[in-house]
Length: 548
Ligand code: PHE
Image 1 (tube, rainbow, N blue to C red):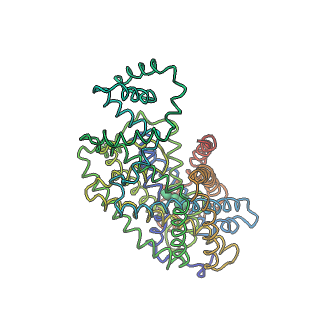
Image 2 (image 1 turned 120 degrees about the horizontal axis):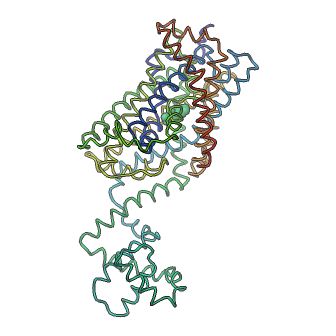
């Protein structure tokens, strides 16, 4: 087959490896991997994940890049060229292009959040609750409860005139959680006021009453020596969470960042493979490696007890369960950008004399190193500040973590650097997602690169608008893509490479580049047997756990 010069190509193996590693290293490495490792007890889970990378991730990556390299086509065209114009596998390509479209639509919104947080960190807004926010936060029911409880505890310790006591008792009756000491009073209150119980909620609702509470709270409680620090400790995480929620549900701001992020992605992709994608990757990836290394070392120095490393190596094996294996497996796909044609597309721009297997090895290796380094960066912070992430949502990256980052040596700068890292990692992944759709339009519709890029970017941008306005929509799109599109795409690609593709074409990718027969046999066995079985299982859990 002739080299198709007009499509463009990566100039060198390094160019390809950095671009493909840029695609692989993303939000999946920086947050999702540390999070699932934490959830599944570290240690053995990391081992299981590494086994999945070697047994499934690496072979499927070789298959995807090879399909791209030999066909020199977009994901749909590749199957048409290799398997006939009416090949049923062209639908696998279509699913992939659709996947790229869908993933980028919300990925760009999340990347936009990181841009907002670069600005917020720069403005040093994670150290204290702004004055004007305190009273808003105090309107929250749980804060009301907290304030009442504190005042009640204060009041019962000193003698009071009857009328004040009565009022306090009345309010105390509204507190749900009480300490032992409070509980005695609570009973008495209930006893005394049982006749009036039904009017209590109304009393609570009365603005006058609440205002009085606040005045009292500020005047009496906050005067106490340690009160401000105590209150700040409780208010700051609430404030951080609240301002994140306010931000993502604000609509306009996320939309602004989504717009800007898509524009930056567009400007890089429109430049083409060498002058756009390769150039950007060669510039961004070294910066990214330096930041990750710097932050990991910084965190490790903080972690005098080395709890972070110990968790990564030994951890809590009892937390590992059957589902963990499937989780590790599913993540291997997401983090290596497999199952939707991103690697296939990049492979189609690889030069004939470059080795698929060696490149795939480097991409897999770099992605794994960054994922492990991200753990070394985040775990010490979690341990040292006793932070326990409970939800798998992307949110914690923007709620609890910034509060801890600013406490590090060089605090504010670390937070800024961290969000720059998140932004850059997301950008190189976004480029690859857009390129999948652009290559499809260029190859299948014969559009020029400029036209393809403008159409693809605009369509994806519009598809992302609902995600910019609604976190629920965003989560739904993510679940659908990562639990349905990627696993089924990966399964079918492995089946294609293992059962339908000309074995000799694949074989040549090994022998022509001096890679041993043993490695080829391992690869072929994996795509034929191991991958289909494992991916099928992941796919099933994806379906079963769809509503989760
Ligand atoms: N690999 C990227 C990450 O880890 C996500 C991604 C998936 C990018 C599929 C491209 C294609 O965040």
